[in-house]
Amino acid sequence: MKLAEGAKQVFLMSWLWSIFGGFYLVAYVFWVPQLFVSLALVIVVAAVTLVVGAGLLQDGFLKAVELQTGSRIRPLALRRVRRFLGGVLLLGYLTVYIPPQGRIVAHWPLDLAITAVSGVIMVVYGILNL
Image 1 (cartoon, one colour):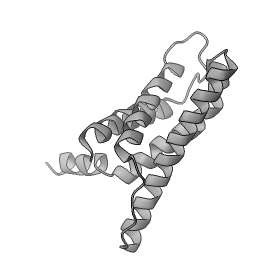
Image 2 (tube, one colour):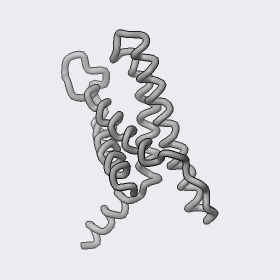
Image 3 (cartoon, rainbow, N blue to C red):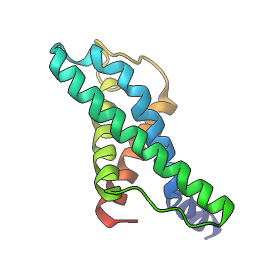
Image 4 (cartoon, rainbow, N blue to C red):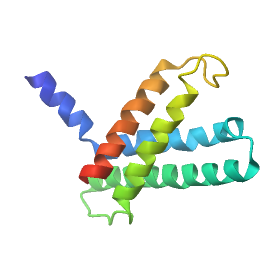
């Protein structure tokens, strides 16, 4: 029973998953030019990914600082939307790992796992407002 409670606590660490999700989204911006042919689409997708990823990073780090210092820090606006959109983007970037032909990332199963879990958790956080 203690293992299940410990796993639940890890999945409820919103600051940790925000940092994971934000880090991976910012990193995935570098893949966008290889995913799309249209320059306009590359710019739009890269900009949205970067803004959402940076917002998740800031959200996670602000919450971590709040937990460490004990002082209340005002959260960023549109947290639910950012989390939901970040989760959808993370799940969308899973397509980079899945097809064996033309795959951008041929290895890194840990990155795949963190992207998948972070994406699902961010979507759930966005829907349930955790």
